[in-house]
Amino acid sequence: MSYWRSDERKLIPMKIKRAVYDRAKGKCEKCGIQLSIKEGDFHHTRDPTVTPRATSIRFLCPTCHRKYGHRRVTREDNWGSKEVKIVRRKVVKTPRQKKKDLLKKLTVPKLKILSKKHDVKVKGKVERGLLRDYRKAPTKQQYVNALSRRVTIEEIESLLKDTTNSAR
Image (cartoon, rainbow, N blue to C red):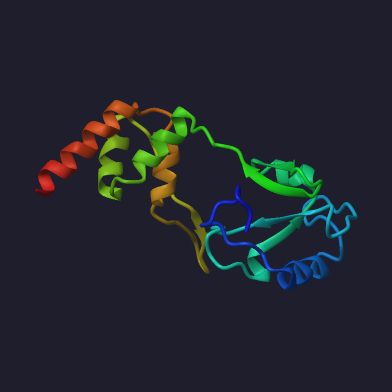
């Protein structure tokens, strides 16, 4: 175990790396460039603290892996041996993303009230029936996406405080 690797992150065993590499046929699973097993990176598609499986790992070239916010850092110790670490970049949330996160905490009835207040029209998905088409009710995600463009963060937070106060 290295002195600079985080203990909570699970290492990918060589057996699983080999299975993922064979599944990818030695190519980056995003852009298709041919790589050796040492040149490519193994990307966790799920939480890296969970025990990795071949189905939850992707084989990517360093360029494609960088698009996920990762980069390679190589360190050399006093004896000349090199160690490569993949470092994850900190993700900064945009104001719209913060609004979406707050809106997701509200219930659908609260989102409906908010959309009426701001005159935001949210249409559901159109389903094709046997005799005629019909419209399904809008999903929570559709309300969140539409309202995130119009509502302020302060307004959402005040609505969240009202719901927590009324629950008590």
